[in-house]
Length: 517
Image 1 (cartoon, rainbow, N blue to C red):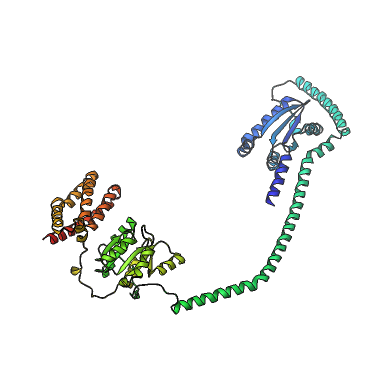
Image 2 (image 1 turned 180 degrees about the vertical axis):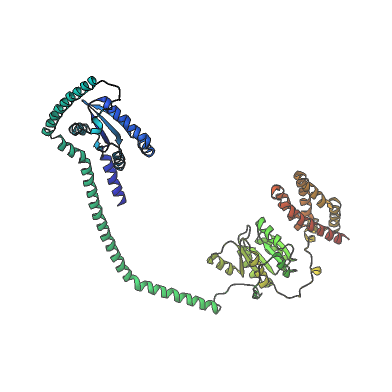
C-alpha cells in the first residue's frame, strides 16, 4: 500500500505545473521596477524570508507581457512552499498578492484582473518632494485629471472584452485538469489495492483450512511415531543399564571431587610424583600443558602421535593418565585408545580425550573408543585439576617437598642407542658435552641481554643437535622453543623460556656427572 500511494503522489507531482505569486500588474515599466525594488528591500530585511527564498531558488521578477508589466515571485514548484510564502507576503503591505500558474493564458487573465481591480498601493507611483509653484501644482492636477479620465476609458474597454471572452472558465479547467487526473489515478489505485488484499486474504484462509485438515489427518500418525521413539529410548536405556551396551575403560574408579576454590598452579603439587603422558601434535598446546604442570612435581612425557604413545607404553607402562589428543597424524587418538583398551596390561591407565569437539556424537565416539573423560580445548585449569583428582590413585602417602623426585633429564636409553650400546663411548660423549657446553647457559644469557640474537641462534642450533644425540629430550625441546621465540624478540616470551631452560640444563649436568662417575 505504501508503494502504491508513493507512486500516486509522484505521479501527481509530475503532472503539477510550477506557480508564481503575483504582487501586481502595472501599465508602466518604471512602476513595476519600483515595486520589485521595494519587495526586494522587504525580503532583505526579513532574514528568514530571504534564506527561505534563496534555498528554494525563488526570485522577485518584473516582466513585460504585452502592454503591461507584472511583478512576481517565481518559480514555485512545491505547494507547501507556495502556501507558506503566500502567507508571509500577505503579512507585508502586499496583502492582495495571489497565486497563479505559470501559463500564458492565466498570465493574460491575471493582467485583465489586475487592470479591472487596480491595487492602490501598486498603481500610485512615488513622487519625490520638491519646491513647486502654485502654477505648477495646478498643471500637475490637470494632468492627473486627464490621465485619470484616460485610464477609466481603457478600464471600461478591457472589462467589456473580458466579459465577452470565456477565458476564465477555459483556463480554470485547464489549470486543474492535472490535479483531477492525479486524483482519479489515486482513487483507481486504492480500489485496486483493496481488491487485491481482500483476494489474498481469502486465498490465505483457504490454505490455512486445507493445512488444518491435513494436520488433523496426520495427527494420529505423528503421535504413534513419537510413542514408538520414546519406547525405543527406554529400551536402549534399560539395555545399557543391564550391560548390553558397555564401553571399554580402565580399572581405576573415579573419585568424587569435593568443592574447591579457584585452582592455581600451586594446587597441582598435590599430584607430585605421578606420571602423565601428553599425546599432542601441536607444539603450542604441548607448551601450554608443560608450562602449567612444570613446577608441580608431576613426571611428564610428551609425544606427538598415537604410535609414539604405544611405543612409550612398551618401554614404560607406569603411567596413571594419558591426555590424548583425538586428532593426530600417523595414528589418531581414537585408534591408539582402542589398542590400549584391548590390552589388559594397561588396565591401570586412564585415557582422557583432548579435543575441541564437544557435540554429543563426538563425545559418544570418545566413550566407545575407551576414553573415560574429555577435556575441552582450550584447556581450563579447573577442569584439568578435577580430572587428575578424580583418577589419580592415592596408593602412597604424600611426600615432603624435599623428597619430590626430580624430572629425569637424561634418557640414557636413547643415548646408548645412538652410540650402538657402547657405554664407554657414550660416557666419553657426555664428558665432551660437559667440557664444551658447561657454561652455555651463561653465554646464551649474555647474547640475549645484549640482544645479539644472531649469535644466540647459532649457539642454540649447535646445542640442539648435541642434546638430541645424548638423549636430553627436555632440554632439546626447550632450546627449540627458545630459538623460535627470539625471532619475535618484542614479545619478550624468550625470557621465561630461557629461565626454564637454565633450570633444566643444570639438572641435566648433575645427572650426567652422576652417570659418568
